[in-house]
Length: 262
Length: 348
Image (cartoon, rainbow over all chains, first blue to last red; front, side, top):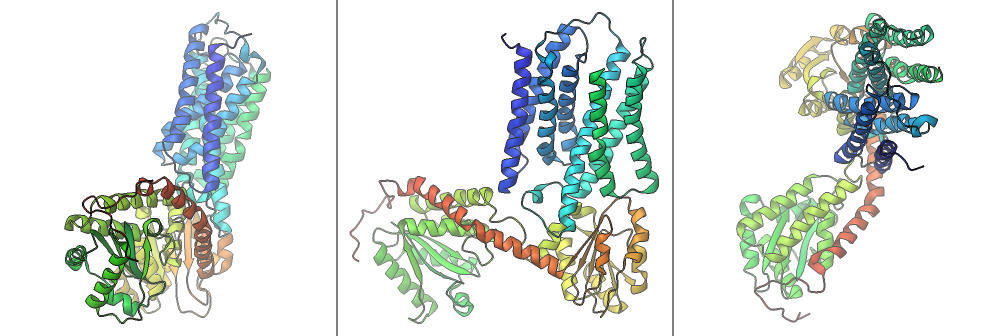
């Protein structure tokens, strides 16, 4: 069976992210990585191809293309890259691309490996504005949590080296840990705010999502709200906040797996 | 044909180097004198505190070298036992490319020499003592110098205790313009370290010393403010970097003095530089989350590691230079001679 143009576009996007990741790893190992046009090119091209896919699929479906796990995972991958372009410049974290590329690749490759990836799009019989808003915002918020996870990993790597009185050539070029702390806070706040609106949107839907799905999303929401409140009220250390952002991302990932199964 | 002749810190003591140094105000005159020599067509003088080198083009390089050698000895009244190194053709170009890449510097990989070569070339160009060969040679040296520095780690990292401290501060805080510094002790080392941080934008210098008068003097010098020595623990919540170098025979900064301020710091890290011997800071402070303590040994170890890493990069740098040299149009089948003079047989 010939591959559809949608599948090919996503395959090329995944290759772009793979290229960006390989370029960053190779450069970091040689100690010569400088955030610059190559990473922007890899991520920009990948993001553009995914945007094309979302447009084609959206036209075919007649709504937001988030009807299958394949589309959901693709949308998250696209959100991560879109947020990178916003957050990367806002927080002077252009090196975030080193971690954005593998994350985007992970989600995109997982999507392409789904059995329904090769199936044609099925037009939606019904449209729900609140339903589409709920799904889109929830997935973009997951993208923000993914980037917070990447920033958290960068923080932990550097904190460990600074505590060991070492600076390896590769890590020498990572963003300053204070910028990472601010980025993690900003990303968690942005992600949680988006998720709050997404959950509220679900309650405006005519046909509300199943209770178990909503419970899962509430658990994710509670995790991040708890983290923000604890950090604000009790003054959590930057290291603990980074560790929670990094390892806490396993909860949204698990929730996706659960939602995908049902 | 290209040639170079000169002396450097590697084989010549400073007493000689200071005699042959050519100040910028005398460069044009010296360059004109060089191109007046019978076999010298073009000339560039690179004169720094560590070297004095003359690059020239000549149809008869051996004769030109003898003339330049004689001119130097006469002009600077040098004794015959002082030797100049000299190179021809590719060897002279290779030497300049290594120089521009920082491989021949006292501090391996330092960047200042690149600017000094640029200035030397600009001065010669302005004096009208460069033409086709030296113009091409120096343009090539700038391109290759940049390529070596970009593609290797020869200029990465910091090689002195002061610069390591600044690099670490930037690794932790990024832009130091938002960082506040507190000096405990008013010694010379802490002053120099604080000045390095200040030169990168650090502000709000607070000085605390057992002798308050000395603290006031240093604070005035650094546009900061002095506080009494009893007051410093109360300021730990507001500062980002503490540089300690008191003469106390025991530790003066303990975890219980830092811990109360951590909550008010709201996750902002604290960088403590202990350059006192015996140490001023209880090492247990390093175990506190968000606090990074570096003593003199830790800073020196990082500087030494960088110096070693730069040494290890020399082979890669030389390989890049060699590759670029082979590809350079300067030494292709038709070697560049001065366009206005015919090539004469070399007398030696």
